[in-house]
Length: 129
Image 1 (cartoon, helix red, strand yellow):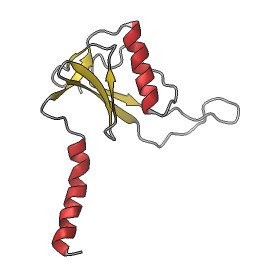
Image 2: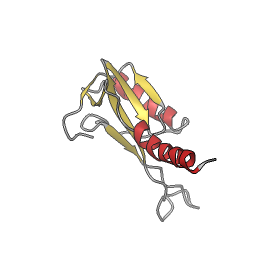
Image 3: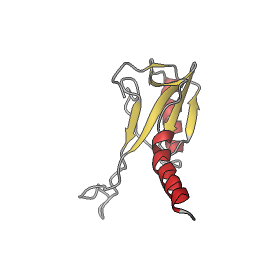
């Protein structure tokens, strides 16, 4: 493979993660307008699906002030069943809430996304995400 082609491929590989993490012109960061029992259940179901069915615990006000939801891994249990001492070295995962037209989507860093049909979203205030 020639050097110019190799350099072009390397540049494309370096830019791709940045481009995939940006919003299109039709999208904007969003927050949940007001949670209902249905929207909380839907959010918990979708976040769990994003983590291959693992149970998640979400705050009652999740995504109402910020467009980014940060999920930390649970500390694994120690020998007596209590949380093990030490740290979980895995970085927290981030999910982004976006508004596309009138529809609300939760997007993972890898590009997967889920439409939230039971959740009413509004554009996020400046600096909320």
